[in-house]
Image 1 (spheres, rainbow, N blue to C red):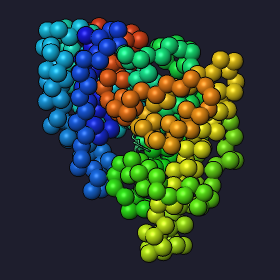
Image 2 (image 1 turned 45 degrees about the horizontal axis):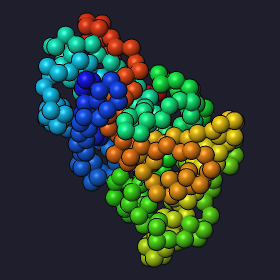
Image 3 (image 1 turned 90 degrees about the horizontal axis):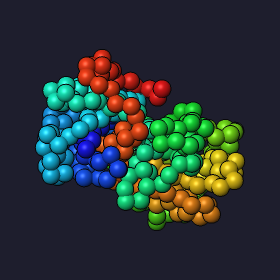
Length: 325
Ligand code: KG4
Ligand code: ZN
């Protein structure tokens, strides 16, 4: 039984997972307060984690039908993410582990997104190519081993989810913008506007900053009234450009394999168009259910199964990190 805490951004999460990857509880408390600011405010996220974390852990234990007596390991997201937010999870996990004399497993958040694909009832076994596209990260990885991944390419500026969020903001939609923009896009024409595709970025790296700026200029040129009238077309063209940018790199990565298989993770994996385009690639595609694609502690627990636990008191100086290592 692995009790796991994830607080890297604005969701306070706890989960109980067995060492076989069976999910017994997966609690996510989303902090709605950030929408009024159009994005996550780090200091507010930390304070809310502090208020919520004990209740969320208790709820996960309740739902799993166990008490702390039944927990054998404590796992926690160490980074990357908002340091103040991560520290709440790390301190809570250390305190729980130390009080119980349990080992602690520090987990990388991105390894967690990959490892969401290893949870029961439908785990995928390496080797596979993995696309992680979230609000904070966009990367392509080669996965040959449960214990980690090899980075093939990553975004040079904004993440794909960030591009969705910023685009949504320009179109006057709420935060997080991905689902709202995608919903609006369903009624629009993806060919209505031509947005830049970052074709100059060769290889397996991504870039979305130019796209966001292009939408900003387009909205400015069209004016308020025309932007509102063409909002669905703008959303559809913008979404289409993001998804094609992701798919082109995925195709390039898959082309280097004899027996290619694809797994997808991160919040953007919930995107309908991306799922459709991935399914049409002609290779086996594995996508966890949406609630395991967006941030959650179950994916962190899944990764923890393949990370060396640290015995007490060695983990007392484990620190959070902001950037990918
Ligand atoms: O993985 P995640 O929950 O958090 C991070 O680790 O960043 O991803 C959240 C991101 C947000 O940017 C959100 O707009 C995006 O995933 N997202 C979507 C959809 N659902 C969530 N983007 C496009 N289409 C969606 N349906
Ligand atoms: Zn994430």
